[in-house]
Amino acid sequence: MSETTQGALQIKNLRKMFGTFCAVDDISLDIQKGEFLTLLGPSGSGKTTLLMMIAGFLDISAGDIALDGTSISNTPPEKRNFGMVFQGYALFPHMSVRDNIGYALSVRKTPKADINKRVDEMLDLVQLQDFADRKPGQLSGGQQQRVALARALCFAPPVLLLDEPLGALDKKLRVEVQEQLKDIHKRVGTTFIYVTHDQEEALSMSDRVVIMRDGAVEQVGTPKELYERPQSEFAASFLGKSNFLRTSDGTHALRPEKIDLAPTGTGKTTPRMSGTIRSVTYFGSMQRIMVDTQAAGELEVDIDSWRNPEPFVEGQAVDLMWEDHAVVRLERTES
Amino acid sequence: MNILWLSVSDPEPGLGNYANLFESEALPRIIWTTVRICIITTLLSVSLGYCLAYAMVHAYRKEQNMMLTFLLVSFWISILVRTFSWLMLLGRKGLVNEWLDAIGIISEPIAFMRNELGVLIGMVHYMVPYAVLPLLVNMQTLDQRVMSASRNLGATGAQTFFRIYLPMTKPGIVASVLLVFILSLGFYVTPAVLGGGKVLMVAEYISVQLLITLKWGIAAMLAALMLFGVLVMLWVMNRFMKLSTVFGGATS
Ligand SMILES: Nc1ncnc2c1ncn2[C@@H]1O[C@H](COP(=O)(O)OP(=O)(O)OP(=O)(O)O)[C@@H](O)[C@H]1O
Ligand SMILES: [Mg+2]
Image (cartoon, rainbow over all chains, first blue to last red; front, side):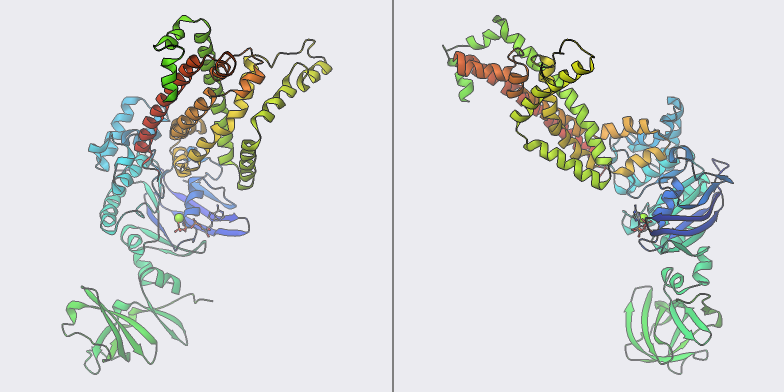
């Protein structure tokens, strides 16, 4: 079910200067209607700045933003009709949950009955029917997060902007709310632009991920593309972990879980390298083994625990094996 | 407690002093004048203070510091200096009347002083800084993202102000109103000077009873009454503050 027909967003050569500091540097993105796009990057990489420009709270220094082909660069925030879930939720503390959710309709002078009907739908969507008359201060973090979501979706915006909406929740609740969010995204068909610096969140939820670095786009792609074909050391190490092999024809990324390990001479395939184990860390389902090699220095190897009932020990001599396609040559090397 | 005792024992034991409240003609009028002037002063000071505090919170950092300095300096200037300054400015032969006369707008000096208007001008001027402080503290702790959220949801600037900003500054307004009102009740110098003895207020009346007519019982009775009024208002303030923590919980 799609609630709007709009929602394709075109961002062209967008730039934001704070004085002489460039917080967003020449970003271009084409966002599809109904897409779940994640902006992923370390702190200070310009994610919030980009989102605030899309929402209209920050002037743009150069470039253009267009919704379904029409430029909105000069439209004030209250006229853009984009939903937004703020970092920290920014609920109205003096209003009940019901009034919070209905606010967007009530400032549009929608008739009371229609507001009530729509708010009930929203309360259903986020499963907060029993909390309609509470104040935000009387809700848990996860519940407040859902109120913020319902409030932003109530007027069926074509685009929903979310700035680290799960940042304040603990790990277990996060996973739960992630699933609810994905589910809601599917049901409303709104374009979601989602900011996070949690790579797992980015991988598991998004249609596409934009990796940002120092205000610029490092790489864009589906989670699988980014994980399997990173173009730079930064992309490879920010999304997942990676070893880097430096050879005469450039730098190559090699994911730790794609390396197989066997005591010297016992491997089933030809060893690529040999080395000695420096440390073994046990994580339950897998073990992280650091191996010192002659050829490439220290390499990280992740081994599924079930595959090696006989545990590896520190100081053991081992062979390292991997498939040809496990090694990805990076298109860009660090300057 | 001495005051309470005095109010029922001087000049003779009994509630005679309190009966005066209803019997005498002057007392109810004085009390009414006091309450009226205090209410108007409070309304004006808090409204002005609200605008000032708003401007201060939303100014750039440099201007903000400058305005705060001005505000604090105004606390140090003695009330006598300020009151007499007004007299020089707005008196019958004050600067304003001279100017207006010189330009030819008026032929008779306007009576700014020695009446309620004069008292009001002086009191509002004195009270505004007090009104600003609680509002300033309140406004500074507000989360600006809440206002952004309101606009993002389609509200105009005016809607955001009246439906979000104003209710969220309610604790500050209540504190400011009570502070100014209680301070104005005890006001004494300004009404005496700018009212020119014509606008009699309770605090001044008390001192007259004490120092000139020596009717200590009546003075004590009025003081007790004011004390009681202030206590009632503090109780109200306390209620409001507790309420505010109930719905202020989410902003932190
Ligand atoms: N109003 C401002 N004035 C000057 N510099 C700013 C301003 N807002 C942000 N910046 C700078 O722009 C850069 C990007 O900030 P931004 O808030 O977009 O980062 P972010 O990616 O959202 O980080 P985080 O993950 O910590 O939220 C930072 O270096 C920040 O210091
Ligand atoms: Mg941010």
